[in-house]
Length: 473
Image (cartoon, rainbow, N blue to C red; front, side, top):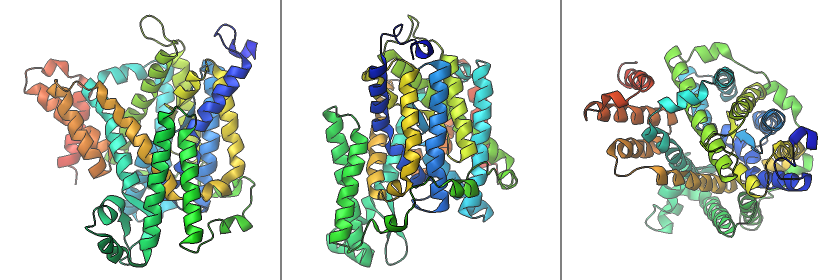
């Protein structure tokens, strides 16, 4: 271990690193159930859900192993929040555009992730990735994470899969429940689904409050504990009030990893023919969007976490940044090949760093734990959507914290951020919101005599979005 990870040189030991890896795992283990829920529309237990479940475990582990042995950094990786929601929206849009099944559209969308991963791998090797980030205006960069946070909160508080009104549509927490004038109005809207709706709302709020309270008390694994607490509430409520056995599916479940389902639905299932059929302009826009978001997430997480751990030099640069970015890109390629959305460095890595993690042994430990989770697919599948919604809302709240970095006195920063904050949750499109932010930023600079402050790349991307919004049929 000393030879592999240079523990003494980094002021740590095996025990500290393993504890740090376990801590990181506890804070981000929610993604193992949440990611397949989001990418498959909460279709738990289906072949596609099983495939994404395994892909989440395997791709995350591969990324962390590369991070451990190539970069020797304590950073963990998994399918990124926000990016997975965007991926699910892209899949749904492909279904609408082409008439393909969800699985076929999912396989077409995986091509985007593969292209992004290969592109990032090349850019990381050639040291271009950091330069691209520097070319994007600060105001737009600062607004992306908070805007995604609002979109995640909208999804979490919005529709909850599995509960439908008698008219056939899903209910919305803020509209059909809290927006109702009286409980009788909500009951009239939902009909026979009212009891399930109440249980869903209560479960979601209990999970959210447990996560927030535990996080306030600095309890490790607050998100995971909150999800488990919400799940217990939902299971008990289902049995007592809905007269439903929440564990019925376990009676015939197999705890062997569902490799067959993965092989049939997601493993190397790239549908390039249908991918191209959605249109070259849309393809290019989607790839650029995924690239921009992933770049900001990864570099921001790496630099921010490394700074807190004292792992940067006097200029604020992290040693082996190139190797860490390569590990991130390899994780994304592995995710595309196995069947999940963009794998990126998780901000929850900070919890392991705070627990003393300083080397790749922390990442290695977390990766091994992710692989071990392949054997609990049936258990992960019975976690209710309401419990994962609580985690989704919490992550969204955390992402809103990025607003503190926005200069509210600088209108060229504030206005693009404000536009993205409203555009992203309403349009459910991260790409469109970023495009609007770039257009607003560019126009403001042009008409305030500061055109030279806008980079050529920003002009090009802004023009690209203008063409998409107003000229493309």
